[in-house]
Length: 324
Ligand code: XMP
Image (cartoon, rainbow, N blue to C red):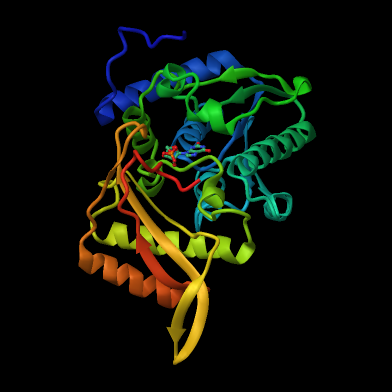
């Protein structure tokens, strides 16, 4: 196993983060010379920190590809373009692949098949973009130390298939010996926005696994809009950065409600807010009732097709964190 050097100090201050950045800039320049480097930039913490480091080190020799598969949270694709292209001046290819993903997922209810389709389609889209580029010699990746420690962990397990054989590049993995908190320190020192650096864990298949069963566009929008309200309210009420993971789920059944004196037939939104250390077990965050009432009122009035809000009180185990 690729081991973190024992002499490496824990990066827990801005000064240590700056020293790490200076070291890595030299190392990256020495490794890649004047060649071009490709990076799949999802907008998650790890790939964002790698992008920011590489932009500092090699500027336009880095080519970032952001694939919008339609399963990202509200505002995320826009933020990736704003931060990396507009503010940091990165070479960024934005691929709108929303229709392509949603068409492939149409009618597919099995969770593992959904994950496989999303993973495969992602590799296909990324490979197609890579083939259009010339002179790429390196592939940058946001591998972090826990990914190496649990080599059967989530990233390798769920998310990344391999690139095709004609697209094999030497890897650039500048944060591979860092733990998550260290990656965050480095991200802050690189000037990334806090909303990006302190992002909660987000599954590779994105909102796709929270739109339970076969994904439809309108139910997916209900997931995205209710998630945005939950995140906004958690941020306003001091829970962002305190609660480990929180999100909404929209199951694929409806129930009866009432609106303006007429019966409705609409979906429920389920709120999940959990604390965990490593995702193998999780406990429930006790959200104050007043806040739950407020979030319920907002979701039922602002999100189309929803007439009910539920709060999932089940720890892991027996439940998993996600619903599928
Ligand atoms: P579960 O639902 O198994 O989730 O308790 C544990 C943690 O893993 C995340 N998760 C995923 N992450 N690809 C990922 O990268 C996936 O397919 C996937 N499924 C679940 C989940 O959000 C939680 O943090």
